[in-house]
Image (cartoon, rainbow, N blue to C red; front, side, top):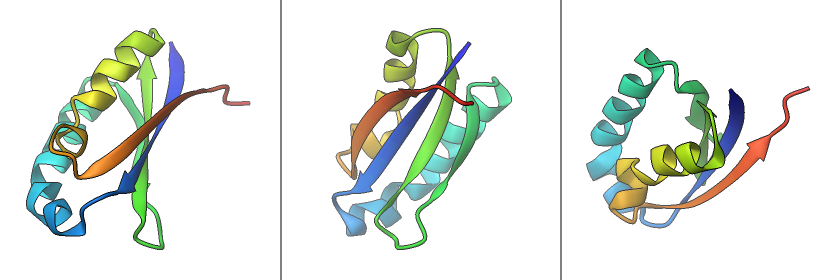
Length: 85
């Protein structure tokens, strides 16, 4: 199991409000499955971060790209593997 950091930077603040419930529901399901290590918004309102637990970059990419915020073009996704020390 590896950790992957998804940075989700705001692209459309108006759509953000519309799709926030879907985003949170999606993440709650992944938390129940043990696929999310941590999550939360940035204090300055510019977006947020999700740390996924996955077996591969491919799996983490699939999880991150399936987030309603990404699917609906609300936020820009950047995904990197994190070597937690």
